[in-house]
Image (tube, rainbow, N blue to C red; front, side):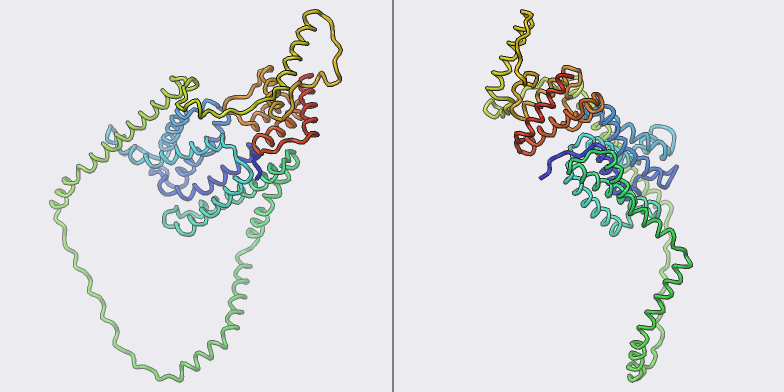
Length: 443
C-alpha cells in the first residue's frame, strides 16, 4: 500500500469536491431574509477554503481555541450580511440569534473541516476514496433530496461542475504523487488533461442549437411512431372484436366543505396560552450561547494559558514505547570523530583524513540519516516544527534552501520508505543518502 502523502496543492482538489457536495445540501437553511438566494450559502461555503488557507498561512489557528473563536466570528459575520434584525432591542437580537443558530453552526463546521484538511496527511488512496464517496453522496442528494434543496438550476449545475473539475484534477495529481513525480510540466499536463474532457462536453452542449435539437427529437419521434404503428393497428383490430359497453352516468361531484368561522377571541386566547413557547426558546438559546462561551473559555485556558507542552503522562512506565534512533557502532564512531575533531582544533595539526571523512559518521540506516538532516536544519534555524510533517518540512526546505533540494529529497524519501513503509533501503540507496548528506554538510 502506498503511504506517501500527497502534495499540499492536491488538498485543494479535495476541498473543491467537498464544497460541491455541501453547497446544495445547505442551500435552503442558510438563505437570508434581507438578501435571499445564493448569497447566504455561498458566503458560508467560502469558510471551507478560507479555513484551509488560514491554517496554512497562520500556524496559530492550529490551536483549537483560536480556530473555534475565529470560526464563530466569521460565521456570524456572514449572517449579518444576509440576515436582518427583525426589531430593535434585546428581543430582536435574540430572534436574530435564534434564526442564525443553524446557519452559523454549519459555517463553523465548514471552517473547522477546512482547517482539518490543511493539517491532514492524505495519501493518494485517500484522495481516490474521497472522490468515490463524494460522488455517491452528491448523486443521492440531488436525485432523492430535491424537495430539500434550493430549486436553482445554476446552483445544481455549479455543484456538478465543481465536483467534476475537482475530482478529475485531484485524481490526476494523486496518481502523480503516488508515482513520486514532482515536475512543473507534469503538473500542468495533468491539470490540462483533467480539464479537457469537461471543456469538450461543455463545448458540445453549447453548440447544440434549439432548432437542431427540435429536428433531432422530431426525427426520433417519427421513427418511434413508424415502429409502433403495426402494433397499434393490431391492438385496434383486437379491440374492435369485443362488444362496446353502454356509457354509465357521470359521477356525482363531491360537495364542497362549509367553512366554519373562527372566533377572534378564541385565536387570541390560544396565542396567549402559547406565549410560554417563545420564552422557552429564548431561554434555550441563551443557555446554548453560554455553553458555547464556556467551551471556548475552557479551550483557551487549556491550550493558551495553561502551557499544554508541560503535561504529565498518566500511563505507567511499562507502557512507554521507545523507538531506536541509532546503533552502538554508529554512536562509537560518532564519539571518535568528535574526539579527533577536538584534538585537531586543540593542537592545530591537521591529521590525515580517509577518503570518506567528509561523509556523516554513523549514517548506517535511513533513520539516522534523517536525524542528521534535522540537525543540519536546526543549525541553520530551519528546524522541524512540532506540527510539521516530513513532506511539509521538505517543501519548506525547498523554498528556503533551493540549492539543497536534491539532497533533502533523497534523505527524506529513504526515511519515509523505512519509517512508514517498513522497507529498508538497499546499499546503493544508502550510498546516495551518504553522499547527499556530505553535500549538505560541506555547503
